Length: 86
Image (cartoon, rainbow, N blue to C red; front, side, top):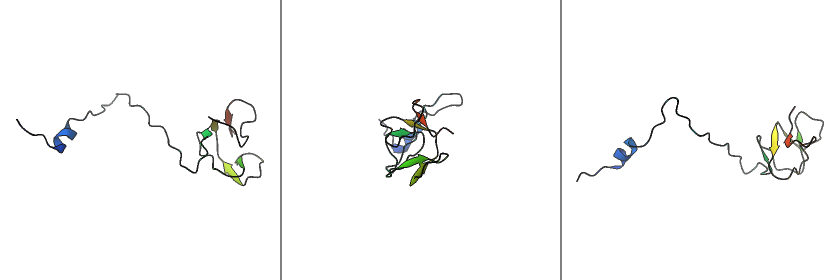
C-alpha cells in the first residue's frame, strides 16, 4: 500500500471552476466596532453621529448602517432599520 503525503492530499482538494457559485464570506467587524450595527463600522464611543448629518460627535460613521441590535446612538430616525443613508 502506497502512502500519500500531505502534498498529495492538497492535490485532491476541490477546486472552484468558472461559473461555480461560491458562498460570499461575510465581512467581519473589528472589536472596535459596535456589535449593534452592521454594514459599516460604528465606533464604540460616548456618542456617534452620521458623518453626513448635523450631529456633534465626538465620533462619526459613514453609512449606511443597519441596526441588528439596539440603536443606542439613535442613528435610525425614520424607523426603517437603516441609518446614515444619505
